[in-house]
Amino acid sequence: MSAPPATETLPAGPLVVGRAAEGPAPRLSLVVPTWNEAATFPDFIRETSAVLDRVLPGQYEMIVVDDDSTDGTWRTALALAARFPALRVVRRIDEHGLATAVVRGWQLGGADVLGVIDADLQHPPEVCASLWGEIVAGADLAVASRHVPGGGVSDWSLRRRILSRAAQVLGLVLLPGVLARVSDPMSGFFFVRRRAIEGVPLRPEGYKILVEVLGRGRVRWIAEVPYVFRERAHGASKATARVYLDYVRHLVRLRRDTLLQSRFVRFALVGLSGVVVDMSLLFLLSDPRTLGWGLTRSKTIAAEAAIVNNFLWNDRWTFADLVPDERSWHAARRRFLKFNAICLGGLVLNVLLLNVMFNLLHMNRYVANAIAIGAVTAWNYLLNRALAWRSADVG
Ligand code: GDD
Ligand code: MN
Image (cartoon, rainbow, N blue to C red; front, side, top):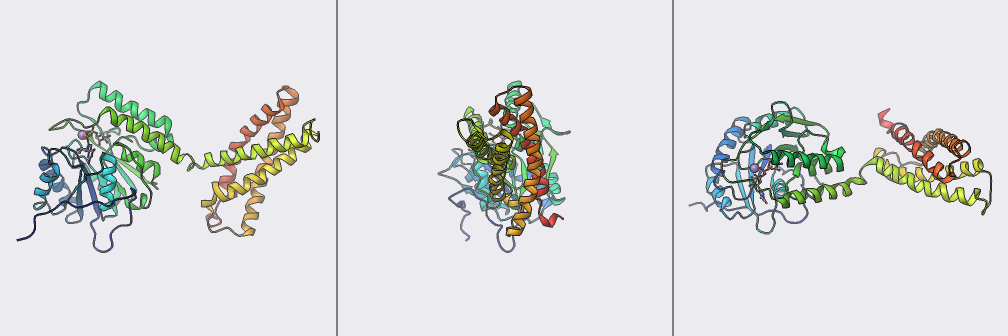
């Protein structure tokens, strides 16, 4: 007699999704985070399997990650595993939280496409078919959205609508480049290609796993499909005030961690270091208390030194990933000359602005200098990104 099915154990350690399993593997690993969903689970597994048996017969797995529910959801799921061969059940004892449960499930999954769906049937299982269709069409990420035509929520209180929108607005303020990429960044229902998050240390907090994938993943092509968020058949949402606090903490951490990922932020920081070089040299050369040289001569030397400083930092940090195979002295020299030419244009503009503000508007020389540098930064960034660090193979 075969041994009764047992729960599987999860990999420990950092939340990093590794390579897909070698050999025959499912095409979709759909993770179902559960916390006290025993009442709904039988209907959930029946409805969802019916859809996936039609769309991906024998080519998917469903991984339940249960945080040791007090209502024995993991036991209910385990008992059903014999009838649903695609079902895998994990009982998590020492960790808790929706988003981390999802990542742990993805770590266990073997497929090239990873998905997440709630177990309370508020996410209609039939939408899995349209999500899969978008992935097959080539999307890196397919998101079920309440905020595209045909999407919506069934019967939400005004309070819940305001809370959900407020959360979205807060995210758009803190991480515009991340949350604005989709219409429903709060969605807990999506499919993503493994390659978009493979090897990326994920650090979600609370509920919002999609925000983490968008913020840290290598997601280029995003598709959205509409769905209507349904009312629960049993029980209530587990989203407490703590979940909203977790969300704010998650946003702040993601903002901090990804700040330096933003190329413009890096360029601006390098620019700031150039300002320090520029200002100190301007003082050493032109201030009456030091050498007292003429302003334009001093400024030209100071600016050129800042350009050299900025080039070295930008070439080794800000834009290094754009030209990984062009590290030869000759290639670097070519980039430096382009960089210098572009910055020279900016320098002329800078000196012009400085003189207008200092001589005509009688502004303080250092304030005028800071404004002039600020005005030129955008010019330098855009042109250098497009010309100096344009990879040779782009032609
Ligand atoms: N393993 C685990 N651990 N699962 C959890 C936990 C947890 O701590 N908390 C909740 N879950 C499971 C629930 O059992 C359910 O299957 C799913 O995660 C969603 O939980 P709900 O509490 O029902 O969330 P919601 O309905 O308020 O919000 C859902 O929909 C929103 C709109 O798409 C979530 O998916 C949100 O992330 C999403 O923003
Ligand atoms: Mn729910």
